[in-house]
Image 1 (tube, rainbow, N blue to C red):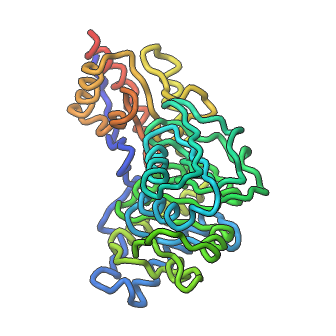
Image 2: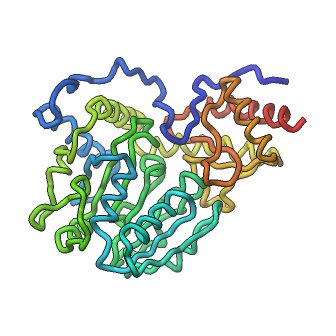
Length: 371
């Protein structure tokens, strides 16, 4: 029979992700709207983005946080174009975004000494084979595959190269070993349910030293430039953005940070996300027609939860459409480059009760499309 109860919030998209529980745009502090981002009030709000992020994440001394253009993609490209070149590069990729960074490094930057450590969807490359005398580029969590690195034990503290980590669907949802990460990027519209178009760039002192001691041989677009006269442009990491940001989006981000603080900080946000994954794990354990794309439970993402179904492609499409038409789950189709299936966001802004309400609907929809 068709389930009786529906999720209160059916937004399970993996980006843009669900807004925080209780979100109301009318409660945002919009005193910055209509003001220059370079005014005292504008710079103060942007610096709060940097300072409060560093405080909530517990970043080590000397780490810088900046608001940069073009979402997580822009932040990653800034790092790749500005930092790579002096050393060989190991690129770990096991899903579409990591593979995109590999393509840019090889075909756009045209670096010669690049090692590709590739794995199929559902698996990780061999972590033990990474050479940390090289610069290392990787995603912490494969948003389109549902596979994450389990921890930071495989990264040595005495590495010679830089670690450049795209962590857009991991920051605020997974325990990151900050002292082992030299560059971390993310966007507001993932785990915090913020708005798009803005990226966050976190640099360690080792990354800053690279920026100040190395000048790439290629032309550098304005929005990628982080140094002037051989010195870091510190203003980028004090709220003086490279281009004009949306102050409405800034207000939205500050609201999300306040929500995380109110929960009890990052550990509480991680706990909420882990509870969401547990709902799916319990459901999968009880049904033989659905499974995780991630083959190793220790590598299973608790944010972008990717699942395979015992259905053909047409049945999968009907399954997804049926749940959308019923208003119980929107935008849960697998990423276009990923294996056929579904992807359900489990970040902290998703209420566990909504996932619990969704589970009977998954079973009902499967029965409908396979009858």
